[in-house]
Structures are given as C-alpha cells and as structure tokens.
Amino acid sequence: MKLVLITLIVINSFLQSNWELKKEKDGIKVYLTKSDDSKIKTFKVETFVKAKPREIADAVVDLENNYKWFVNVEKAELLEQLGTDEFVFKQVIQVPFPFKDREVIEYCVVKELPNGVVRIDLKEDSTFIPVSDDYVRMPISRGYWILTPSGDGTDIEYSFLADPGGNIPAWLANQFIVSNPFKTIKGLREYLKN
Image (cartoon, rainbow, N blue to C red; front, side):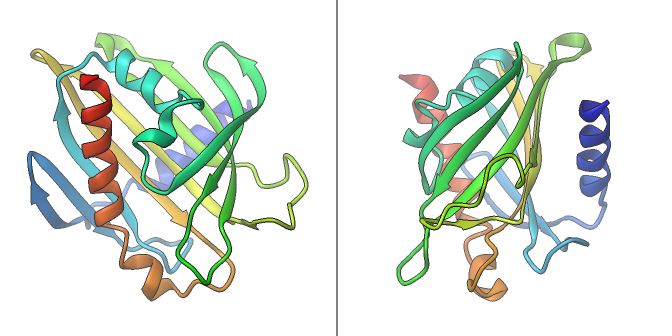
C-alpha cells in the first residue's frame, strides 16, 4: 500500500504540462516548471544513452558508486532493504560555503514495466531516522527516472524536485537547477562508457 501511495504522489506531482525548455546541448534537454510544493523549480531531463534500461537503473541505485557521477553527492548509505528493488537510503549533498551540507532520506523503488521499460520512483522519508546535527535535512526530495528501450540504447526521462531547506534562498537554489542535472547526465554517460 505504501508503494502505491508514494507512486501516486510522485506521478501527481509531475503531471504538469507547462515545462519550459531551458537548455539543449549534446543531445540533452533540460526543462523547468514551477512546483506547487516549493519555491524551488522542478526539472525534467530528456536524453538518449547507449546502454540498456536495467544497466542505467543499476547505475542510478548503486549507492557505493553513484557519487562518482551524480553532481554534489558526497556519499550515500543504505538504511534498509525492503525488497529486491525497494529500499530506503541516506544521501549527503554538498552545498557551497557558507551553507551546511544537506542530508536526504529517500524511499526508492525500481519497477520493470511492460516492453522493457524500467521506472525508478524516489520520495523523501524524513522521519525514517532522527535528524543529524551535522547536516540540514532536506524537506522535499522526490522524482522519477523512466528508462525506455530505444534502438541501441535507452531514452531517459528524469524529473526531480529537491528543496534544500534551511537558509538557502530559493533564488540561489534555482540557479543550479539547469546546470546540475545537465552535468549529472553527462557524468552518467561517461560512467556507463567505463
């Protein structure tokens, strides 16, 4: 039941038609839209990667290695394995000085859908463990990856809303909403090549 509710919340959060294309380069498109839940904008990335959907999904949820290509991720830690493709994890996100690094607790489920499509849903679960004095707990962190087989690779749709919370002003956080996902996808492509 928890899985169904979280999936519906995430789907509902991203069923928005007013996406504005902000960057298109190297076969990567980054769109933004306003969010109902935050002053931080939601981004969506569309691209193609020469890898199978499951290979990409495995790279996304590889907590020991995804910091190598995920922009600003310092480290990640599995908190609880709930099933083969369902778990809760903690991620530490680096933010520029003088702000304190962020911590996000995330519920994740990976689903294999018909026609070889793989979907990853992520939703914050901020009460799973107590808040640490070392970090600011992110109040909102939710999104999805849809990985669709296409020719010799995969069409990726990746959308996310990440509100850093604390004393980081929305105007400052929104300055990185286009560049960070763009760099993340470029990093993912390079990682998958190796």
